[in-house]
Length: 503
Image 1 (tube, rainbow, N blue to C red):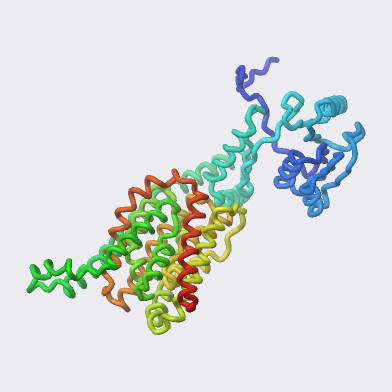
Image 2 (cartoon, rainbow, N blue to C red):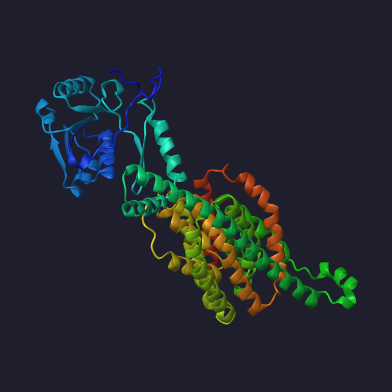
């Protein structure tokens, strides 16, 4: 009886059959103790930590020794390879630069029916080690049929960024649902299809309703705040009995600091547009160096930043970059922290300015160091805990210190392995409500006497926005982080030393 295959083999295609092994139930022989051997051993331990591995090599580097010191299932034997080493192993991996020995190991493995992978020698391999994308219980292996490990590595990086870590929670929930179903396999599949179809439709409807709701809230909040400011300015500075004379007197009322604020807004927006963070800390550093009143600094920054964060947050929401669960976890604690920070700075900022100014300078110095650290840090996936406390601290320090929501909240979540796309989107949309709450608090306690600072920063930011958008992605990100961080540190040190009377 002839069985026809549903898969048609084509010349030049990848005909490898993908298999996921329970490697922890097998034994592995690794021949080679150099950097390539370390790479292979690290791949084994990261995917199957309890696998019994025997490493045989004439020389064993420190990286392998360090790994063996923390894993009791790795055995090191510093000697030459012998044919008997294969007997107790189910899988053999070679990582040596000796063609003769590699050929010998290949023949020994073949004669004893053992599978072998030879690093950088596709012709000797029975199987290849692919690049692995791991998100909890989800694991994706990428193979290029031994043609280009570099391409496989690049695809791994792309998928790691695209696939959210939260997908593992979906898998956990689906398993719970699956275990509760009864019937045969076909019945379970049909029921799961029905359940997920309903959820998809429901989520689509909820998404549209949620989008309309939050869009209305953001629009009404922004409009209300705008008309509050407009009414205050009209009633305070433009008496209706003398509109013409007031308009003529406006140029004479503009102070020189207005033009400095345009420059500050321009610089801050340029940094924020290129890095995705740094607006507040850049403005705070510049305004501190100009001697602006402390509560006015933070109030002005948050009022000006509110407009840009509103547009940015809505754009992220529109393009599906927002994780609703993360957004809700950040929102309320962030607002509470921002209101408390704004209240405390408004209440005590002027009276204790001589004490608070060096503290804020030290804080911006810390943020500058954190920005530089971000240029060299590699993210390590971890479960993020106490997101609400992080948001509360970020909101408080952002209001009290004039900046820090991005460097603290965004960078912390990304460093814990969260998907950057969803972190930036969720933090951006929550930032609008945080800055709105902060600006309303400052407005209610300080009024709007510092309107020239706000208008100057808004105008400067508007001028810099298109330039920043053009620069984003074109300049080396690492260089930008180091440059901005160094500049913030320099100005913060200057302010700190000046506040302490050093010069």
